[in-house]
Image (tube, rainbow, N blue to C red; front, side, top):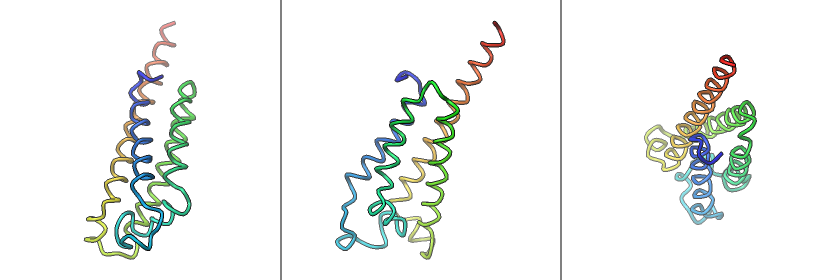
Length: 134
């Protein structure tokens, strides 16, 4: 389980969500309103998006015997992140949204989810090819 590369990718997603939880303060009045996730910030702080996605990813790491379930969960998280990215660019200029540090979180998460899904599919292809040889 731990030696699989997709588990490492998912663990990195988990760590990035934990860093978001630790680094963002829960009082939006004391921080800048146009920075750190923009209009997606209420979802991160008020609705516990980072905490819930970290727990989902941690559970997903231990579902290594069910790769199709892992892929479905990662696709669901990918869609949730697309929603967050759309909210990041909503009602703000493109220049402000591009300079927002929250964009780095979305780009890293998209890349790691893509690499996880790709690695899981590669493992499934290896398993199916070995089943054909039997």
